[in-house]
Length: 594
Image (cartoon, rainbow, N blue to C red; front, side):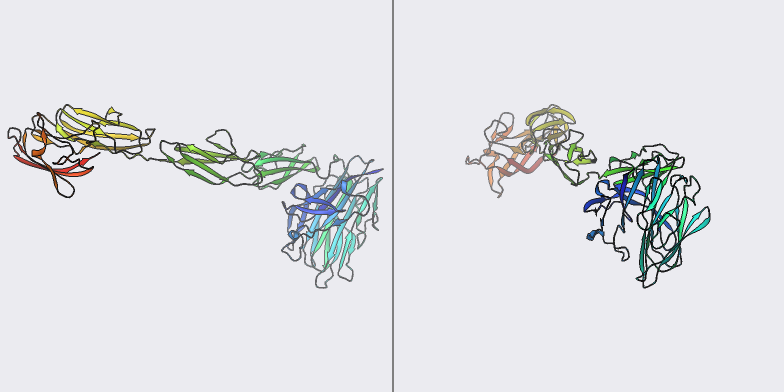
């Protein structure tokens, strides 16, 4: 009694990650790297071997035992740039492995040889590393060989089996007159009996139509390798050869393609690859992204989705296992825009423009805060920020050191309504012209004095005083600073004290322009408008009992002067008891503010 165990479709010459559809009995089969199985031996004209993998797909649910048909692909994306290789997958064939219930342990191996070969070159295929073979039962070896010729030159092969350096002639393959022939070996292995499905017979003959060889009489018991080679006497390329083995073995029966273990990994991460069984030796492929290709559990750091295949040898019993690692690209942002803050805000912002891919939706986090779906972060103060982008698979990308600068809009301007006087000397300090600020700190010679918008400051001692105004908007870091100097003379010093600003607007603050004379006599005081016209003289000004001359901001005729800048000329005669300078003249500007 027989049951269908492992029907497979195989495709040769596959790229590692190109997905492609093939039809079997009008049912689609997707070929990609997850179905890689046994090794493929590729020979070029120089005789070098390139060991790659072939693709195998389980099609148990698509075969009907009779009339199975594979439809060749004809999609445009399968066309190769090489004229002699028109398809990326050069051939497809159906392999059906039957299970003989009386045989407790069976094994099957498939080898592909892709040859582009000139004439008179030997083609030698070493079938090594297979599970040990019992020779007390039939050993099926079916050779599928498609031989063709170019330019009318016939390709002819003499096929030889080599066991322990001893050669056994199996026969000759000769093309027909149309310069093309193919040999397709196929068989059943039923009730311990090897039978050809076509006109193949269970013998040691290989020719144009008989491709089934029984290796029972050739192989020593528990053999694990042998050679089959062909000598091309005439002809040219190409030659495609497939060899299928079926035999009993002391090794555990396994599926033709072991279950694929799947993992998902973010780009840049590593993962430990674990095997499902224990062996004595391990050989992993591909090797380039592994830290140790012969370890049982190597560390893999793939940059793209990779199907890792490991060949496990346990005391001569070999099988393959698969670990598919799907690599998710990091969700790196295309652009991140940081808009500066108006200092004292918050008014800064960060706008993220992500690199949208297949693993949306993305979420975003600012400075390790909770993830949100919004790509805009607003109402931010100045400072350093980082943005974390996370995709739906949990892969992340972080942008560090995003800087939102504080744009300071404060412009500090300080007025002192008199900058020179005799001790004790009082003047008004004002920040009325300062813009963009809502906090004011006054310092005199680096000592804090007041936070008022304006205030009266009295200097009891003579000296030079540095006045500093620090004005800011909401927070001290949003500050602008300005300074001026106040000179206070001793009481016994002759001189005059002239303010430069007053505001006769009736608010009771600095409404009168006052000139104070100390130990001197006023000889001339004239005020001119901007056109040089005298608007008032000293004899028209009022002098109080303390010798202070007042001007209320009106002309001689009592008309209010408009806001603006006026020019003064003052001459005083200093008391010789306090000064030797005699007559001294002062010229300058007065700012009238309303």
